[in-house]
Length: 366
Ligand SMILES: *Cc1c(COP(=O)(O)O)cnc(C)c1O
Image (cartoon, rainbow, N blue to C red; front, side, top):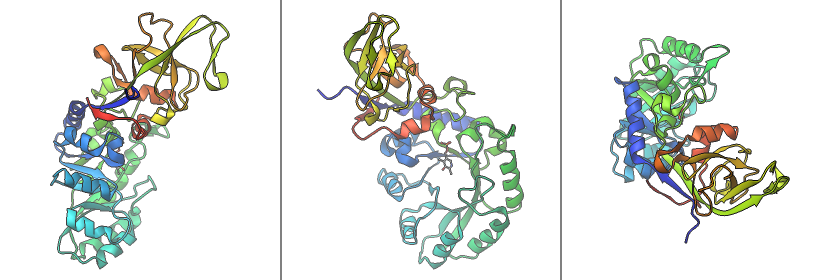
């Protein structure tokens, strides 16, 4: 028998969450963001649930090829654009739309021999300071692209740094939105500015022509713990589950796991779960991280090791050897453990946990 851990992908949750993006931005089209192997869900599996999207946005040309291999003929957008000149050949062949964020990418386009008209999204650095042309350089870049025979249509994009929260005590998107609107005023082209956080929190101001729904498509919450998945009506698209493979009876003073990080202060029953950091469970999750045993909420005990963690069964007398464990996602009997809660306990975000599932974990459709 294989080790009992597995990762389930819920296609109907993906479809539901995509519907939530549409409901938030009813007049926009929706890019389902499937970078990083669809946030760890697998491009092919995610596609089953997200095929009603208007387009798919990602970073890797290899992932774009995988989408085309699934017979997706609609728009695909490369969010970071091309990385070297010959990538443009693949863009021509696979009809990929690509972002243009720096002068070098315009130089490459100018030298590119193509019969396919290219569709690009010119990126404004409106304050994030990762990618994009500064407001001062943006219009000149637009004019350069407009003059190129290789370029057919130019869209306009930017990306928010603080759409999930306030920034220095005020609305986190206002300064970037103002910069984008000022610089792009009067320019022709479709606009895309919203990520999940903007789509959920500021739909009216940011929907534009396309929204870019990443984490929300997978049921993760960009502004947890201010809001949770129930508040935004998002459903988990990933479940990580395993089983209890041993039970330990601890007396007061006994410790469990490496470093003796947990000491029992009373008689404690601990279930040893077949899941560890080599599966992608966060090693920094401390004692007290939520975990479901047979659908009932309890806490982890001690340090996460490579292949195992311990869970407190003291208040769960009916559970023991072989009990079903939900690390996050959907549990038995309608139970649910939001990935955001586990992430918060481990000092990270749901995004990171989804992306971190390791290759040794079998993945299947729910
Ligand atoms: C990853 C990414 C997104 C999606 O962000 P979420 O917070 O997951 O919705 C949108 N736009 C760009 C440019 C990205 O890189």
